[in-house]
Image 1 (cartoon, one colour):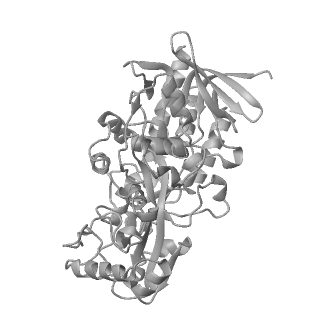
Image 2: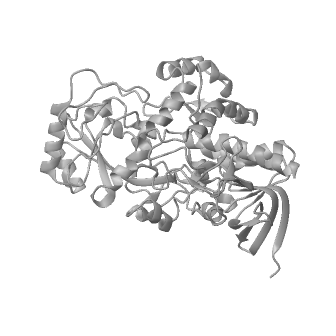
Image 3: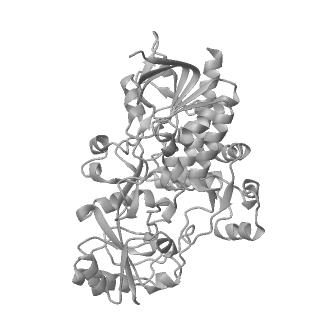
Length: 495
């Protein structure tokens, strides 16, 4: 069969937020652009279509008002009360805090400096934001229509600007010229092989979270069995193709974004589920609970920090328990404070009982151990008010437990009691490729840059290590996607 050939200035591999930001930035400079999307059209958008927000800097709520179509002064006042600002210094410290100081400082500098300007650039492309004042939210703002609508707007904008999107098109290898420069991509479609010739290529096709073999290889035993919080298409194709031509690995290949998910969630989530009502399986009220394993024992500090700075490491703690499951235990006090409203809206898998023995019987866990665990927890709670603010630590801790709970220690004394089962759900992997932070051009193991090759999104390594602040991946995808697309277009124009 005759192989099909296409010629473009810039080829973008991957139709997530990072890839489409790269495509739009390249199109802004007047070059021809093709976007290769592995998924069929009805499942386009990647993990980006399943997200909610971007974590960006703002000096005051005055910076937020221009992002909202019809800003409500009352909502802006409420945001001011919750989180009046997130300065560049604060964002820097958040990332360094959550990654134990391991984030690549050169990448992080670009990330912090360009976060808000990139948000304004997106606003100029027709995107908007809405306030998020939910009691357990991890941020004050979310994308209008969340990630799904963001992605739909992205695709519309790219296509109106002249970009061409090829669906059901899976990259198989990178093509190189005589001097090692990247000159295109070979891909596989349902009709056969296709070659895309290009002056520059941007890889933005995700990590290896959907590949059980790679998960076991890099993340360790047990990770091949975990459920995916995202799409099933991110199988490491771009990473493997880049490594095959000498791209330099960077960042934490043995860690990932993994959070507590409903114990009954499916193996993965598809973007097509969103218009039908969606599938919201994240169970993020855990800082206000105690989490116990099937033996009835606590195993982690549920509130070492605010939820937005702990959730991406909490899945790993759950996976390490017997059977890879845990249960979030709440008393009536948490219910009265409105902390379980999200669970009600999204049909969380759980049980309710008048006594802890009722709970234990329904869950099939050791009742005596659960009673002792809860009693010890209640007794260890220190005096002072609890304030379950999702942005401010309240210092309401326990003393004398192993491990102690550092914040949000709400008593579990009065019934009815509630318990919600959770498992580990992987969102994306942290290991990726080393790039020049100013251009997003991929580095070679020899110490030079690979001409014609750029990367962004989950494929960019070095920012995240073992943990991650909520919404930062989408922000980094937009920032470095824009940089990669601009750099690729400039290289194509100069070629």
